[in-house]
Each structure stands twice: as C-alpha cells, then as structure tokens.
Length: 339
Image (cartoon, rainbow, N blue to C red; front, side, top):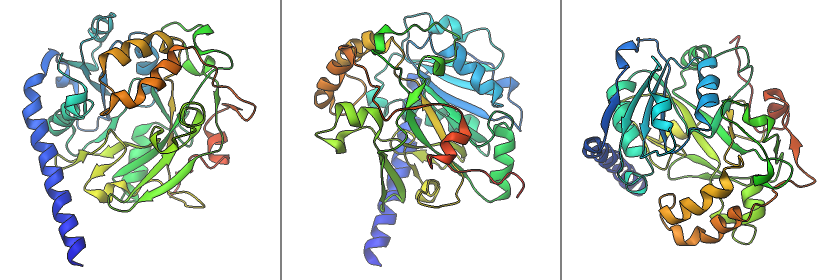
C-alpha cells in the first residue's frame, strides 16, 4: 500500500513537471497564422508538429477533414521545403513556428501540450504525426464527431490505436508518390501478425512492438524496436499530459484504452506512411540532425539501413483492404455505434 502511494505521488509530480515544461517552452513558439477565432465549442481539434512534410500534408489534411476535424493547430519546426507556405491560407489551420530543438522539447510534446492547454480543454483532441492516418470501425462513413459522442455516452475519455507500418512491394526508393495522392496506393502492405503485447503496470498502458521495422532492423535486439501503441484521441483537460510521444498519458487512468485477446474495448489503427520513397534520402538527413531519439547513436545502423533502400515486403505480408479487415485480424476492435 505504501509503495503504491509513493508511486502515485511521484506520477503526480511528473505530470506537474511536464505541465511546467510546457509553460516554459511556450516562449519558443512564434505565432505565424492565427485562425483560432474560427474554433467553435463543438470543434474536434487536431494537433501536429511537422518539419518538411510538404509531400504528405495535402492528403493528411484531406483525410482528417473528411473525418470531421474542424481545426488544425500546427507547430512548424523549421521547415525548408515549402511546408510553411502550404500551411498558410486555409481557414481551418493555425500555425506556430519554432527553430528550437525537437528532441529537447520532448519530441514536440512540450509545444503541443501548451497549445492543448490553451485551446484543447474540454474538447476532443486528436494528436498525430503527419505520417499517421487514423482509421476505425466504419470510419469511411462515421466521423470523429460521431465517435466522440459514442465515447462520451460510454464514459470514455481516451481512444487508443495501433500504429501499423505500411510499406510497398519492392525497394522503398523505387516507388513513385506525389503530393495529394492516397499514400496507401503506394504503401499497400502490412504485417498482419507477429506483434508482441505487454502491459506496463506502472503507467497502466499497453506496450506493443513488432511489424516490419522490428522484423527487418531489430531482429537481434527486439526490445529496441519502435513502440506501436498510441492514444491519439482524448477528451482533453488542461491537467493532462502525454508522457512519451502519444504512447502514454498522465493521469494513468487514460492509458486503459487498448486491450487484446478477446477484449471488447473499441480501438483504431494509425496507418503509418513513414515509408514513402522520400524516406531513403530523409534518413541520411535525420541521422545528421540527431533529433529523433534520446540515444541517437544506438540507431545509426537503423538510419543506414533505411538509406540503403531496403525492401520490407515478405511472403507473410497482407494487402490492405480497409478497416473491417483490421478488425477481422484482431488489430483493432469494433465500436458499438448503436449502444
């Protein structure tokens, strides 16, 4: 009992410390395009930190507008590829700029936490990367506003998703993609099995690893493979914080979202479009920038392997057909829309 009380005390102070970090880091943000006056009380908001995502953003915005996002709050972390120009002009996009370190801002989470404190309180907020496309049961016909109503009715405040790495058949750099195209037309394959699910008791969160990156780049050191569980959709409170990207939150009750092995808790999938052909050139750049891992030197071989233009496809790969296929495979769980 005493140990549990001490741990709860430590987690409360960790949450407060991260909130104070966000308060301090707000001074690193410069408002570039303010359209927040267009936010209405019922708006579903999307928070995203980007850098040089001019190729992905046209379809990203199309996808999430179709899902019912009514305003995007974007931190542009020093883009040089035309991303900044692309972000301006849309009435549903507000932009903040910063050239400060992505890694030292907890990989952008300090910046986004501040924006969620100011704009996200008591709203359903989606926090994703530019290479993540959320799908869920009947997401082709029922949007995030409909999903939020179901979650509200069930007393849920957070909604989990498995990040599913999508990849092409053939070397990554040999594919062709242009801005605005549907990424899954190029990245049409995924690993349907081979995932390891564990529960981390201290944070009460699921920890998932596997997929093509674990299979191809971390087979000898599986525990270094990327974490695939995320909690992207939350009924936000200014008291909440993400702890490690969007993998877990505080208070820890928010982490009780993803279950498996017969659970009926609803969940989604983030189609991860990291492996568009530009990844081959970007990997060399990101290795030099040293901004994406706390111990970046440990991942030099990973960047080198991506720069070598690998083929991630294998005989066990499945062709993506839609959300129902992912439900049938047990990679996400259906939503009780009529409940």
